[in-house]
Length: 498
Image (tube, rainbow, N blue to C red; front, top):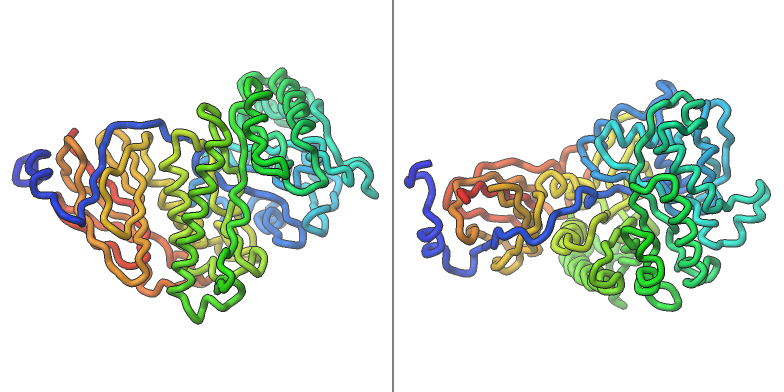
């Protein structure tokens, strides 16, 4: 590389002065988790035909468009479970499909065919290069009503969870081999308990900790190499994480929290229904306030987990009335919340090992990352999904510090070798923000910018234009500044010489 092609590090440092400088200290601070970008899949009955809508019964396989769209989204982990786990008996989703029993969806309404079970879910994850994460039936989280349903006892104990681990991972498991699968599914991530602390119908904290130890011992006896996630979120007794870590810490690898309840806080909010359409700029400011609240809650979660226990955010999305169906979530107006949330997780990547900003896919809910046209047609990404795809593709292997940022930009930074990646949100509704880039102790030989910047921040993704939020790639010459339009979300990759 010749001098005329880029500035030396000392010369660049001398020239890069002023409020528009975005500076990075490239010293690696932590290793970014290979599981950070997660999607959450739950059969949702009549509420949103998420799993059923993704299955092609004519081909008796996953919809090809769904598999392709998921591969494009690129989740590192896909989680199976949620509230559904409280009454899910995993054996009903194995064996010959024609012999699998239907089951009632006790939370979301309707019935589930069990056409998709452990074999099909593991196969989907294999096809899209994602790790499966199973949420086990944790004695129905202590909810007594599932012991005496009209269909019988829907709770499951530690032995049933351990048997599931064996079915997935034991090379000699007889049941899986009898089902025609001689090779293990190699499922490494397992969650014990889902929202166990929410409400008054589930376990108390002490009961949950005792049963967590019981489940962890039984499951790890079948496979000592699995990663176990225990529940640590708030209940009536405060965060469970401190006591869970103190008493069960030697048996678990992470504690789980859910970033739920991210709902309007102002008394005069316009984020309910369609009121935001009359004052979109005010809605933008409210969403930025919610992003600030999300970051405060994240810090509280990390503090509750203690100084050493990793954290998994296994559910979370922006919750705007009407429940799970506000059309604002299909507009770019929602972008600052989603992008700032992912940046917050990445900046705390020393502790956050799994995170999500949306439910995975479906055909009704706007809190999904992906929408499916039914009965056929394209699968396309919402703003949350488009941002998750962009950040997933341009996150490096190690977190680094941003030492200086132009006003209006929210930035998280990583590196992989000599490449420094910046994930950037322009939080300004009307103002373009210009940035020039500096990497401490290194010269920048140029780079690339991958940017989503609709001219109208009320742009929505329609089914006939599924790629409206696909990023535009541009070259970044050495020493050049970049202008981020209002509301832009971008990934900037800088090639350095050191």
